[in-house]
Length: 463
Image: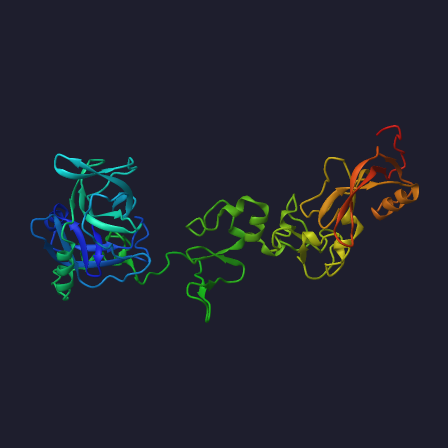
């Protein structure tokens, strides 16, 4: 394997030593472009392979023009590098080549003088050893455009590399424009020719083993699943790749169907671990995979109610769920949500008007924080500081005066039978008055209210 650079729809430039290495390895040479990472799953959709049909060596130069069997298809992944004669005022330059993990690893270099003439030296230490790097050095010109200014080759890890600058680009362009006639070369492979040039025996095709480096000898083979699991059926008039599984099963990533009750059990029945995804680590995720009908059904099945949150019901972020959860849940559609800012705004936004119920807009809690569950419903406490929620935000209630009648009313709307609640007003302090009509605010002097809806009265000496 050796490197090169596309400079024309039918030509790749490489360095003479690289070309000699390729010729010595066999009479069938291929070019792979558009493939970045080296993987174990075959070529990417953007990759293209071409056979080299001729190698043209320019006179008194290390530049070799490799002509390919058919034109490259230029797109966002594959394109050519324009060429220009080398000048000493070039600044930022790059070379690229293959490593053990990538076909196109790019590193910055500096042009330096050396005993051999002009050399290039890597600016940073490469994490991986280059594999026979060669091709065109790309440098940025005064207009910020990268042009090819010469050929290079590097065969030793982190060695200073020889560089042959272009001094007559016009002659290279003439060669490429005058020798674009298609050339047909015979292929003496009597078996199967891999895309990268290897010849394998015909008995190795469709034998369930990759003999070509990228596995094309196993592409399109009529395999039967070696499993008793059903295979998902393509949807009629559906998008390519979409299919459905029988009732009570779910689709694995490999298109097999496994009973939903077997998902998240710690054993991979799919064979590819897709039935044991990261979602299995959460109660909501596990229910969604094994018993999806229990998610957002109005009954809590997870200790922290995560299966009934607005997010579990498919509502957007910063939402509030309208229908009640638990024993008081009404029969009907589940999972209706509104924007959190519409909660306790004086206007019923939920179909059932739940968002303006006092139990969601008034609460008793410690001064520092409001205690509420995953559905943003406050805990029912019979004592604490009076809190009020408006436009989805909780505030500590502050009043300039208070009475037993108001205390009794608050205890009643909070659902406590004792309507003779005791209370304490805190010391007067500066608070904020929110105006419901125009959403404006103003500063006022008022006091916090500490309320007890139990029969035991509060100590009014405490503050």
